[in-house]
Figure (cartoon, rainbow, N blue to C red):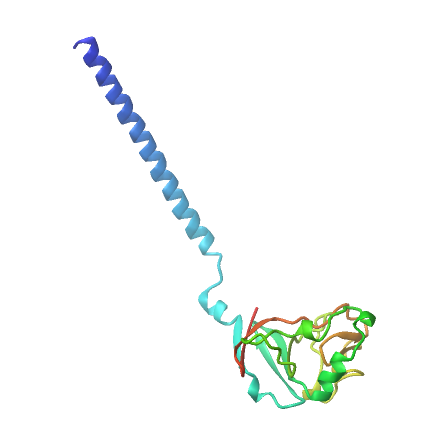
Length: 189
């Protein structure tokens, strides 16, 4: 074999070897990526768990001056249909005097048209002190401020779900919810 043929043959062998190494590395990387995806994806919530983490509620069924309570993923939520007097009471509070200052409007979610439905208030149903479930109009006790009262340790919430008296450190949280229509909301965890 001539020297030129040997050099060409060695160049072809080196190119072939480089190609085989690159193809093997690429295949191994793709396999590792696919395996990693399977392991990571199995940590996501199952579809039945995801379905249990949201709920659509027909708010037209909530009586004026009353509330309904729903459980989503084992957590309680209050949906209250406030009267004009309850709305006025919530709006007239000096926010600067509150432990956890929030206006009533800050605790409401806009409807699809951007307006606020001041009559409907949605809050978490767990007291922010130790997680007890406060009583409200459905149980006949709205506390000193017309909202909710936690009999476990004496926290009083107003008609906007803001802490006004007692050991609770903060307002009843407003969950992630949206208006599906003017009469239906979707609450999700």
